[in-house]
Image (cartoon, rainbow, N blue to C red; front, side, top):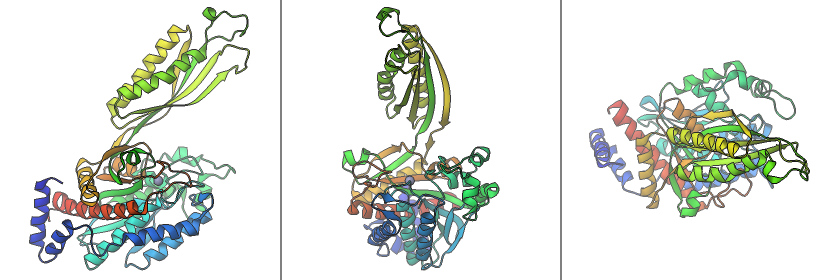
Length: 449
Ligand SMILES: [Zn+2]
């Protein structure tokens, strides 16, 4: 936090009266007496026991186990005087009314992939609940801002292949025509599957009204990668989610007998495609923080005795900066043409999917960085490779930031996903500090009190 902002907050607390002393005390101390990070860890374990098996978490959205997880979560919410409802897209909202209707939203997802990890998504549903309990206790049931915790429906898209269902319906970005036609492995359509859980497909975007008073959105998540692990850090502030360019690249050569065709006479589509494999590592390195992946390669005729006539590879490129992402794409296109020319083959490109980078709010990133530093002594800024519900909130124009906690093994979407308990506790404490700072930030920058 910059000093001016801190000073403004302290000044506003002095004006606010007696409670300001408590607030100033809170800013200078490790954590509020009302916050119990241990409770969050215990609840995460309870949820794991209730909805996981030896293969991992089984809370796939719109299944009975998912509904059971939510039912359990509702019993926890029932201990607080909060309003609880499900919106038109199946997102579960808990609201602690504050003095202002302007809302600080904390979001996560209780759904998991099949055989998933025990922390992905549900960490913030439960950390958010703990922070909400703290706000309730510390402000005698009425914090200055309204505090909301949302459990987004079907973040993972494990069943229908469409991630961020609930949050994209809420942000207005969901493509209804595309989603309407999605089917699971058994041929059940998405509209039919959600109808079982009381959700009317054609109305899902009405859920956007939930964001009417949204002043800020915060999300704590397990990193799902090895960056914090390799740096030996517990927590990091997230700069935004990567933009993605996903393309199919097809090289067209000529099939020819593997025995009778001299090497200098070949028009080998695979040779040109294979050169791309090395090139993308250099493109990624030149881009700074970008990543590139060739995830698939199909050759035709695909037999051992023929030079490859046609080779189709897929290229996935990601970067936090839109111009850098566009630059990576241009470089890959230029390289593919060069390799095609060198090998006397043709190349064609086809876009499969694309999404713009979603940078988070610079001031909230700074507050997040401060909250981590105050909790752990050291922080780190990093982008997010995976998409998260937070990306939808940022796209909806809500000031947004995420906090990452270290993944042991640097792995997620796997039953071995794990985080040290000491890091989970630090995550809850730092996230609570971020929530408090954000509330003060909203008061000063938006509400002027
Ligand atoms: Zn997740």
